[in-house]
Length: 544
View 1: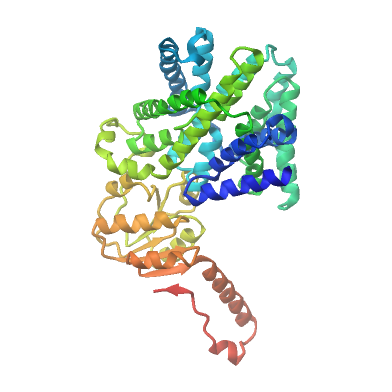
View 2: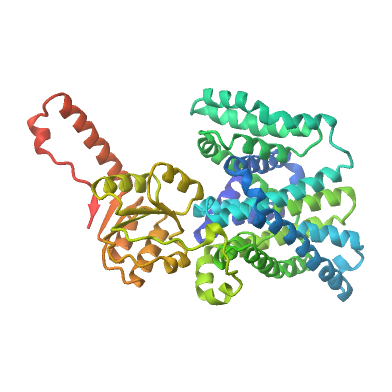
């Protein structure tokens, strides 16, 4: 049966990806298909263990990338808290009303049970949001950091509920966990010694599953909370990003098991699907409440919309809350299946919403901008671009190298644009003139001051769609200068040339040429080059 499970999951994931949706929706579908053919969660205990590992490693990965200070920002802690209360105030009377109307699943529920359901439905999916942000490369954008911060707050609320639901107070030994920050120097020394290979991955697993999960569970706390805290503890280490990348595929494979287990919980009845569909129709209320609250905290309408759409679903933690409630007898067992279906359908609709997020905003910018406050968030205010001759969009390794080369030839006439908050500080410490902005944000282009002396724009962003969008916006601003772009794949060359980009460089081919040129310079500096090498010119692969 195991080969059939793997093949079914692979086929469903590939089919869903082919129509432009995240593969995780295919994994959910695979779970329901496997259940139809007689596979259930109880017959695959290993799958449940892998699913738990996936959630634990996900929280560990979030911790590795989390700036703890972000949780203390008003838009995060207050936004999450107010949204939780607002969602429950909306869901409790509505669910009760649906019970009075005659929906059999709600008719006999007490107010305490309705409140428990409202609590479960108030969460948004950490797994879904992180997957979408990682796929779009937006983990470090302002909206991405706000969304992750809100999700962390929701996870804390869920962990608090799960701890209380045990009916037992954590051990007094749990107070000893307060000493973990003092162990950081020792942990960091071990981190330094493990190197960069398989020992690094093993170190990460030990930190997440042993020092985090097992240690916290031993003193009566949730293992997932321990993994999150251990990730935060390691976040400031210079190799934290490398650790996150090295564990990426472990986390991804284990999360596939999680999505399969959702579908393996059982097939719903038609009435269950109907009720789940009604619950999904209520998701826009969650979106609207997020947009309203976040604009009250001085975020721009676009930032608020992107954050809200990233949270436009029901959560796996809602499933966990429902599972605990049904196990304790607080909710009828069929509610586990109803919420599982609601989560699945909400993912199905949330995926295209996030794909179309920028287009949705561009269709209604003025209506949404009416919600904005006059005194915008410091990170969301317009930033003047100045009057440069050279503009570099994307200040990663390629953009930084281009900046340094141009600045050495034309001092103080180059400006870089980068959307990742943590990268901006690094560049400023290096003395580079870099402003924060998202070149995929229509508002970014509308806020830019005129730069009459701008001659050349270098498109060094990692995503092809972002480069195309930037060219389109600059042309709408009547920019008449030159464009130069970096691509990863040869098939992207023609689409960029079609927009009028003057030169396109293949990233991997340029890297090889640069390496060869560097090697030749080293050889020529130590001994004369042969006649053949002097005559041969290594061309930079540029498509004009």
